[in-house]
Amino acid sequence: MQTGSFEKINGVAEADETFVGGLSKNMHAKERRKQITGTGAMDKTILVGVLERGGSVRARFVPDRSAKSLMGFINDNAAENSTLYTDLFHTYAEAGQTFQHAIVDRNFDEYVNELVHTNGSENFWSIPQRTIKGTPISINPEHLLAYVDERVFAFNNRKGSHFDRSQSALTGVAHRRLAVASLSPH
Image (cartoon, rainbow, N blue to C red; front, top):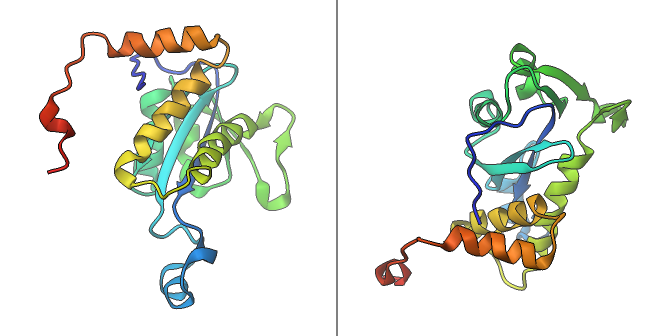
């Protein structure tokens, strides 16, 4: 269900990141004190996404929240001189060099400033987060990308019928080879 494209998002885009991992309230107190520092994002998987307003979303893992990681992904997926809306996170400060950049400052409970907001991006991230929380067992990090790809696919094809989505997914399978050896757990 991965949908790779050489075309970059053009126009108005929103960028935001999310963290996927266990809840601190489920950790043993000793482990919680050791691991949870600062923002509480330690040992969580970081996902970043760019959403084209009224269009598609692109998402992937990043190793950290550095400018190299986050802005690298955004630059790979959004066309220069596009309008980019982000939150106040300091890594996005350099976005003004490439994009028409505007921010919302959630520190002051600002979620919308006229047309400037990241609500669409946050809406998208709520979908995979709810999907993962609804999973009856834990998700192996190896398979997390498959969950995210499936949610990106569903989001990007949300305007079509179930038949259209099925047909699109099956089109992506055509002429692909799956070796039995790759299925073996050993």
